Length: 409
Ligand code: 3PG
Ligand code: MG
Image (cartoon, rainbow, N blue to C red; front, side, top):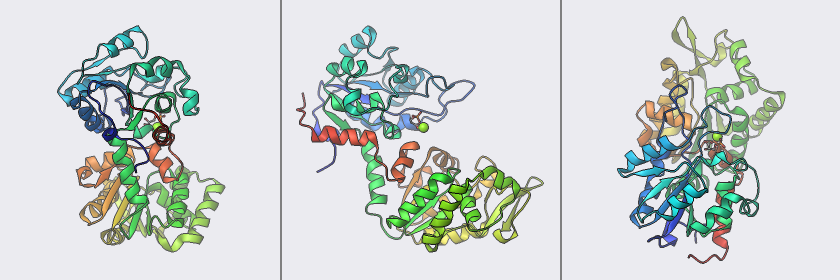
């Protein structure tokens, strides 16, 4: 038995559905247009299914945070949904006032609307329990208008916010198809991976990666961990390599992080694979140098060719590959090579491959390799929370709603 309800557990014909999604997208800072609509695309299967089953759907979502430049209304998101769906998804500039209530009540079966950015509500981002959030004006006013709450907001699953968990205490609730797919992919990697399982961790968030390495090797989730990018540099430093002033400055590793990385290396080092060479930039050209030739006065910007070959051999023999975070500065063409080669190795292997983190997915898209991964996660913070083994409040709320006797209306 599943831990939570899915769309299979309800009859949606002529039912009013409140659908919470995460379509929080990167915007262009000048035009405020949506720059990457991947998260909007990823909620289409759930929306299409609900509409084709005759549901009346009101979509609730957020974009940015109050005070931030990317905190904008959702009219453009509704336009994108309209063009992707080929059917009008009207934007309603209200959440639970008269305009919203009228729009929700007059929705015909098979139609959807998008409500106003829910982070307009000052209490939306309060961290409370689902029962506490259920007492908010948002839930008290909206819940009676709906038959079912569907949560497909995996990208925000780590936030115990009002609209994300409060409705699960007030309405029969189900996970959407994206939520299901994300959790299934993570379950495959974390609970039942084909062996050997290889984790490739890169990017700049080394402090978190230290904990993730410790966990996935300690729990035998991963058989090997390959460390690249700034994370790789942090571990090279912990191994005693002097990176050179520019890289050290960028790293800003605290004594605590250094100690933690040293401890992980000491206890689990034989399962950790680090770069043997790195790339630096001299006179606008890429130069690969052996780690033994560090320190340098130029920052480390990528892994070297020798490392790419060494890592590719490990990846080729893998049953599962989880990759999160780039291997180098992918924004610079010369230094995207490491990331590209690792992605090529992963996608041409027989392994089940999962790619995480928005930045890494953007790089895969650039290298035209995105579609070759078995699964690409829409989660940033949610994925990090999962990697650290912490519970996801949205998933916990869906589980609680599943356990509660709440007869479908
Ligand atoms: C995200 O993109 O991380 C989610 O949409 C949650 O948004 P937040 O990080 O602003 O809470
Ligand atoms: Mg975030």
